Amino acid sequence: MKPAVRVVDLRSDTVSLPTARMRKAIYEAEVGDDVYDEDPTVKELERRSAQMFGKQAALFVPSGTMGNLLAVMVHCSRRGTEAIVGDMAHIFLYEQGGAAQIGGVLLNCIKNEEDGTFDLGELRNKFRGYDVHESQTALVLVENTHNMCGGKVLPLQWLEDLSKICTERSVKIHMDGARIFNAAEYLKVPVSRIVRDVDSICFCLSKGLACPVGSVLVGHNDFIKAAHRLRKALGGGMRQVGFLAAAGLCAFDEIVPKLSKDHARTRRIAEFIQSINSPLFKVDLENLHTNILMIQILTNRITSCDFERRLIEVLPEELEHGLVDARGNGISVKVSARDWSFTRIVVYTNITDEDIDLVIRKIKYVIEEYHNNEL
Ligand SMILES: Cc1ncc(COP(=O)(O)O)c(C=O)c1O
Image (cartoon, rainbow, N blue to C red):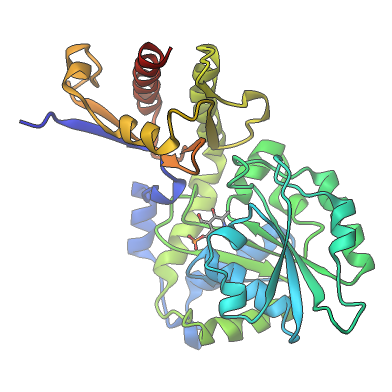
């Protein structure tokens, strides 16, 4: 018989589940047809979002991918324009090249530094459009926090310097702020401060904020007006969508104030891995900012897929060695293998201190097993 298993899912904060309070808010939401502009809860979410981010207007959209695509298409609406983007950015790596596929916009890549920024000197040289052969740079895309750079928060000074360069060239800046509230928690500043120097931002409700669906695009009135029109063309006009907006409003009050707990719990896992001084697994504790932890694998004899598989498995000998939760269930930990040498862990509101204890025990067991076999 298969043992009973307790699963702790740290693959992504997108797997977070709505809280009881959020479910109640969804149930009780006042709704109307939002395509007719008649949903009061959506309007309230958009009003609060614009106000919080210190911009003129906001638009509820079904996903971060759609919000980013709308931003690219509006900022680069002239044919023959391009957007410059970091080579580790979600928009470049994981949105199917929608900018090109759907928007007809060229993405011109610049190398991301480990901290999620890119070299501003190099950026100056990347701007194009002086010559008839070239597409014209209309937009720069940044990501904050930076997912593939391990949840890093972009330095405010860097954003200010970037903005000066872009203003000189009349180039706009869009921030993929899927996890912007995590950045605000880390910097201890309001989100409006972080986006002060950018033209538009898209933040997600369905990642660390635990909502079931949705993102919000924020920016200038004219920008949002154009995005609103395009959203309909992309099939993103939704009807009684206040049910989803209600979850977002609840998240502002219930989840955002607690994000520091996710960061502290992520840090506990990182501190543990650092403390065992493994020759095979490494974390960069000093540069851990938010709720995303990258575990680096230092040997090519173990791939991140091997590590991922082993953490999910519950072997009979683990149970014999007492690797179980308080109810006697085996422990299965889901993580995300990123490339051969990195495994990503993401913590969110439904993950408890007890879950973290179990994760640490499982990682300890598996790493010791590797040490015994490998060394
Ligand atoms: C940094 C970043 N941007 C954008 C997205 C896209 O969001 P969605 O899955 O809602 O399309 C994600 C999704 O994980 C993300 O991590």
